[in-house]
Amino acid sequence: MEKILFLAHTEPDGALAKPALEALAAACSLGGELTVGMVGAAAADAADRIAGCGAGHFLAVEGEAFQQPRYATDAAAAEALARAAGAGLVLAAHTSRWARALAGVAARLDGRIDTHATRIAEVNGVPAVTRWFYRQRMEGVLTRSQRPWFVLLDPGCSAAWSGTRGAATVERVPVKASSRTTVTGRRAPQSGQQTIRPDARLLFVAGAGWTKKQPDGVPHPERAEQLILEFLRASQASLGGSKSLVDLSGEGQAVLACMSHLNQIGQTGSTPRHPKGLSTCCHGEEPHVVGWRFITERRAINLDPNCGWARGKADVLYVADAFAVMEQVNRLLGGGA
Image (cartoon, rainbow, N blue to C red):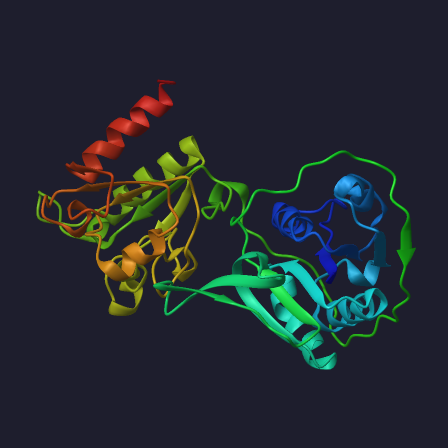
């Protein structure tokens, strides 16, 4: 039976984020001998919250030095936990923090690592990882004989673990914190400016049509941005953009100030997993639609009835002016309808 180490880092409030709970659920589903390893300022509360997961051991590297995400301290902590657990399979959520550190840990332990896994399950008696290749057009299933094997699971691919709270016995693993990096603070957008919401029920995607000439012969990017931001505030949707829209800033054209390459959806952007998606002023070209592969329900607003969305790529296509539609939608949302 495979020994499994589930790695997690605590959040500033001491809890485990949803991606970590999703990775924990995947670790529990394998049925091996499970050990939980946590990194953070304090791990006792997080360990108690997942005490019912069935893990045989709870290990922790604690201290204020391990609260902040830094390669040196995170790699040292993960290496110490992996050595203490003696596990052949190490699972963690594909967060920016673990993605930065665990490849180096795998090299230190003469192991291997696979990232952006969407599923892990037992196949023919051995763990097998599922992931996408060639810009999410091909799905592959792979196994490895090399141990330790580190696997980073993409968020949103499975249900989060939910169980009873208990009292976990946590064994502290001593690690000397040594780093030349000093965290001086954190810069984050104001809550009203937040446009990327991974847990939102709806993904709203804007295309380049929002910045093109309108019926009066001139573009209205300021009005477009106002309509989009009003809708995001009222619906708490997440904002995405087509490549053609986010690239406009490099072409000297009018752009939406709320849009950046971080919002890009498509084969060179992100591939979100929201339950519903609404595309506006985007023609549904194949590179853009690749990013919608895991959206459950897809709808689009476009003036062109022959656009790509009309060719079986959208569940519903509204042939209409997005400006007029979103003005009416915002009016309804503002009126409580």
